[in-house]
Image 1 (tube, helix red, strand yellow):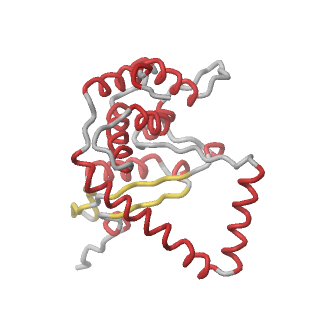
Image 2: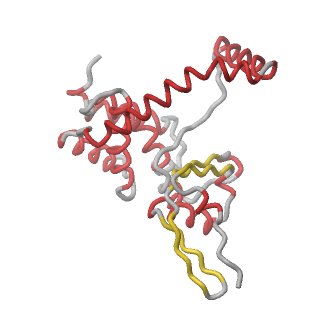
Image 3: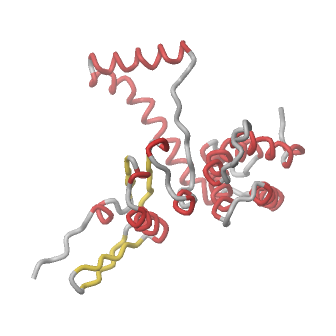
Length: 225
């Protein structure tokens, strides 16, 4: 009798699972990935045998929306969405190219040079993880977050929940135990942009502008310039 062999989800337990071109995966596979990431468990049913194993991981997906989009129900399951565009500023483009050429010439030297920066980032994240349980998000801010989500006509409650969690994480990353309006402003577009309904008339107002405008209206009394 063949013994059960751990698959990809079992190996990803307590780690990060990266899926390239997630928008091209079959919907049922994406469903399995998202359900496992949310519940922390995966059930394998094969040849009349059912085995449940831990599969708690952070799911990171990437893809080109021009090649195909995820169904809104699946897109909603992703906590945050970052839109990547080509850098237009000439000086920034030059810097990126220079750094790439340095890496190509001597990868080991380049990585050694960046080691201290990476260690600083790693240390900051560890400190934030320790601080996170102590971070407080006020009742007023929680109410305003839900008002923003409501007026944006966002389906479900995941958007509200993710904004709450991400704002606390951002505060912890900046060594704060109380969430400020600036923490919410920094993450709200990432949390809500992919949850907005598409405008059939193709409005010139971007989803980012729409979210930030409503945020400014609701949090006006708490924003410091």
